[in-house]
Length: 184
Figure 1 (cartoon, rainbow, N blue to C red):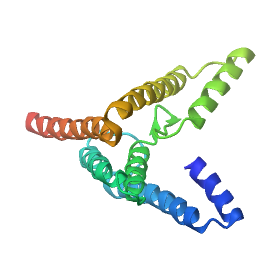
Figure 2: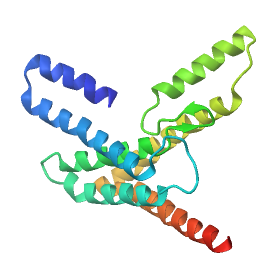
Figure 3: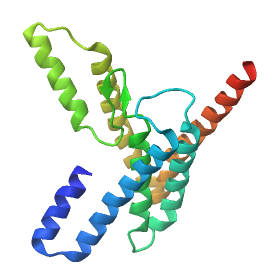
């Protein structure tokens, strides 16, 4: 959303009203996805027992809906994908004392830089936080490589991979919840 907001500023300055409309749409769609997460999950801390399965299923559905929409000349596919990203990003924003953002990396690289600065000063390292940042950065890189490879082969159908992953994860979470209730 940082890039979209920056592009929005440039489009406003240049009077490119079509781009302004598209960029506002992306920002609003992302925010609506985050709002859905807030309605479903109700807290930013990761905690089992919440409605993550429903949120993941919605994310999966939004990605599946985006596929045929991307093949049209309108912006609807990007709006559905942005909404899925907002939902994903808001699902678990705090974990192990770190702010977790699953759709962008600036904060993760900032945390790594701060950690290296602390290391150079001889201060204690927040190993869990730095490990989490490293895992998220590695996941982004691996996802970017895989996504680009899939897009070359499947075009927009490449979105089926994250849709399937989130859908199966959501289903698995619902099954786990039912199993845990049954065991009680």
